[in-house]
Length: 532
Image 1 (cartoon, rainbow, N blue to C red):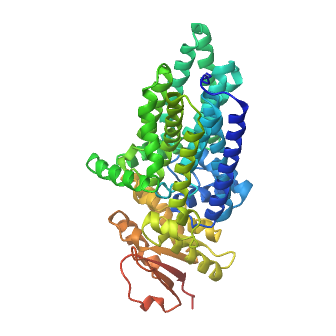
Image 2: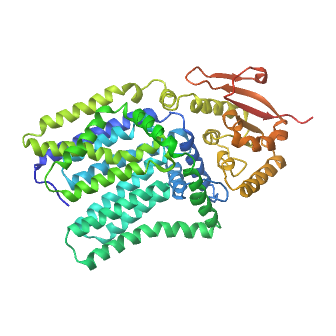
Image 3: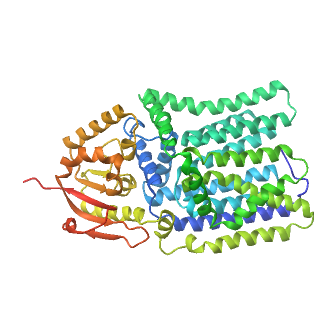
């Protein structure tokens, strides 16, 4: 597993440690600046569901989501450790990102050498904070990457010393990545191929290879079996199968191949424009590494890792920005491979080469300094998503917190569940994310869920409603809107925000806001009328 022929000397190791320390400090400084950036809807949703788990709620019974359950348990752990707040959740992901950076360093150091390891870690640092990949958010992709890296680290060490617990730990980590988000299946495929390749390369006997694969499989199956058992005991296993498999298949089929090329080219342009130099080192790294002699199995595995990382972005052909976080461990390794290959080719002092990479990374930081250290914490969200929607939900939530009493109930008619986190309110229905209801393909099941929800709302109307026109006026929500029409007549509008793309958002906070003329894209806060 060691490939250190061309690199030696404790000075390189000490230098790499100091550079890693500097990288971590820079990461912490930047991410501390991100702590108060308003939630995007996905991170807000997962934070909310994590708190629901801590409150004793059962996944797929008391609330619904298409992801596997470890995502709820992971966010529950983050909320428990760092707090159920904007700052707390982002602080938790700061820690996860820092650990991931260190693990990238340790993996590449084990496989290659310390300076190459630092190149990989620093490239990963910059990639993972990419604005148009939602790097400033607490997205679940960061968790998948976290478990992936831990799994690879354990596997690299297991193949080096043959310890059973490391094979098991590798399987556990890779399985947890899958149980956070289904895209993790592609990284499990890579890990299995990598494991078999490394074991065969070591010229072990068939029985030894089989034994180590069994250890890995035991680790992989254990989280799956444990989660299945827990949900079965909670009476939620069948519901989990529906939401995570059948409903997810409907979601994946939602965007056709005809839109795939346009989606991928648009997003590739966006996510690369802030990191052009780093992307260039990655692309050159893939090419230059293949020109080296020997190391064929490493070349094949690295190329496979890159390909499967790109495939993990593809399900559904939507290519949303945060999906691209999956490719960044592989891209960081490619940047490191450029340094490694050039160092071997040049065969002289690596200091000028190291200085060149330091300059590239410094230029990238200066290029994005307004993003990393912006005075307007709302600006990264506005630039990434093209509107004031997410900052607006934070401002509306602050207003709601001034209006609501502790016992008041709140319903969000839309797909901005972060409002529940800001207001510390529980959704009065099982759909914290209304789009999950109105996108159900099974009409009978949709009617069953819809009618149950409407019955509950009419029996116990919430005190306040956040009405989101960008959801309720969609074709797929018309039936639900019709069912809610009599209920909504019992409410009056007390606040309104008009969202205008790339323009100044207008806020109105008063009881007469219902007379304000506004466009079609708006959010209103409704308060239950006083009964005479």
